Amino acid sequence: MRLLAVLFLLLYPVWGGRYSGKLDIPEALLLGIDISHHQQRIDWQRLVQSGELHFVFVKATEGGDFQDSLFAENWAWLREMGIRRGAYHYFRPNRSGVLQAEHYLRTVELQPGDLAPVLDIETTDSRHPDIVRREAFAWLQKVEAALGVRPIIYTNLHFYERHLAGYFDEYPLWIARYSEEHPNLNTRSWHFWQFSEKGQLPGISRPVDLNVFRGTPRMLDRLCWYPQEGLPAARASLEASP
Image (tube, rainbow, N blue to C red; front, side):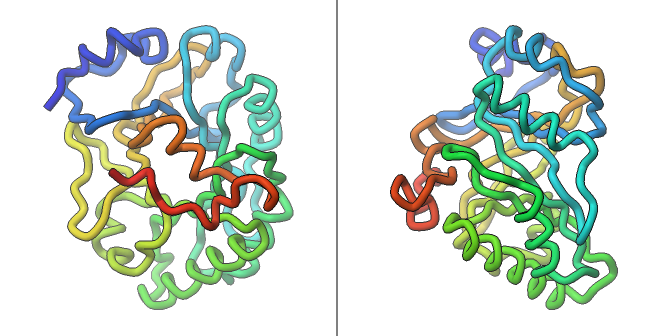
């Protein structure tokens, strides 16, 4: 296990010295955050000046008709600041997966180099797991067919092990586990790890989720959307896995 102090030497301007203890980070890594209206308005210029962020995921939509109140503003600022951005959809299994996908596609306009769409799935809404997986798969298929890129799945470790393990192995995986040790999955590797929900960063008034990507900038590029004449991420293998 590596001491977080080693990372402070490299990334202190971003973390601001607020996270303590040990953190087991395997191999190459890139740091990022994810945000929604819960972080309120962000001073993006102050945040960018404080240190380098390699990527930011933004909440875009939820269910069949909800749009995050700060999505459009955050999405535009990220493009202005030149930060790699991705947009996620909070999935509600008690709604049609196809209709939720259509809502996401109407809301989010990707630009070349944006991260692939993210399906945030962490509740069953009291539905049977088979229904949850069926509707989630409908969302994934609809979005992939429309954009030509394979979406990323976000979930927490407990939900993954209980409901998703072995079902969506062809999709990039973003796992939440608030621990000093990175997630160990029995059947596959993760691509992103959300390791804390208590980040304190300049320009953000509330705690923010902290993430790492398991790989290099070039590997992260393979999980992004490009027009078909560029690099079709849907055909790219998941080389972010070591």
